[in-house]
Length: 478
Image 1 (cartoon, rainbow, N blue to C red):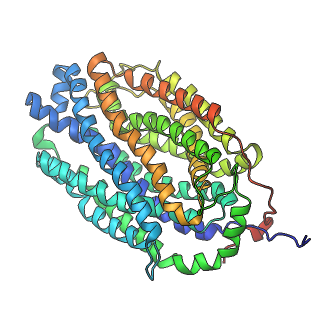
Image 2 (tube, rainbow, N blue to C red):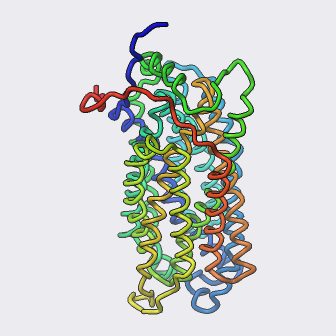
Image 3 (spheres, one colour):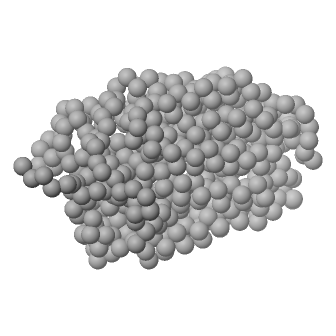
């Protein structure tokens, strides 16, 4: 037996940072989409059903705002249903694609270009009260973002050895949250609630158009940076030996073999991870979809408060992403995810007891925002960063480099199926209970169930010991 020392693995932080521009564009768009579109839909359906703006309806009959949410949920779910179908398709197609610029890049470039062109038309058609055109533009954006998303996310594991993917995913996610931060800052200065609460004559298109236009521009720039700096084919060839070593050191119960059916143990692990992921994304998307309406129509606070929540949660998430890889190296990915879910459950249970302050502070009769929610978002942001940082690497750990796009599609199929179902279920819950508190109760139950499923069904298999490069050399900034 050879006594030769195994080559050390090291994470190229510069390259991982550049790959992160793909996720920068993704979260930038989603932050704008999720923060603005549900409120657009609420307002436009209030006009269709009651011939009143949502602000007028809130003042005259607040219960009817809740009655509209199930329709909002159906529209948001239809977009996610399309994503559920398209994500695995584009992920699998990109696995089989061969071009001079790589297998992922063509999908990233085309998807970004079309989505960026269509995105600013959503607020324009809302302002014109054209619901058919607005929903059509939402569908176009979502379809082409699905072309972009699976290939873009698969790019990191394509050129990162398996034992290093949790750390790399932390860098990728930090870049994504920087993208979301751009949208958040815009939302602080261009308050959606100012537009929604204004009389029709006082509604200014620029207030809602600028965030969408800026998001489109930054998405296009991020895709260009990615294309200019990441040469897929060359990097994959250079990384061939390190990727092969990563396969040998993978945190799997049985070795991955493309020429044989997936082992029973690995299949059970995959299903358990995806099942738990489905549940926590049901909770995550419930909050993401309805928190803007929750703040405007239940807490009667400024929409700017939602943006401050996003900033606080984002900062906590950045800290979580920065240290999640190191935590996973010590205790394993299973217990890192489980502890993140447990912390999130505690935070959202606390949210169930938060109520409107009733203290008027704004010119439009807006109330002071309850400070307790900042604590909720701090804990939830940190906890879910631990979850998201480790869960995706656990899924692509169970396949070889030939199927990364396909398994990325599985990961997003689980999340998108959750996001298809949850807006409708929660919208119906609002309609039945006529209580905004249904939001935190619903989310807390699902987070708790996902924690139980993950902790009880997923095995804690650590990667085999490897000799990582230490010190400045570990940065590998060439």
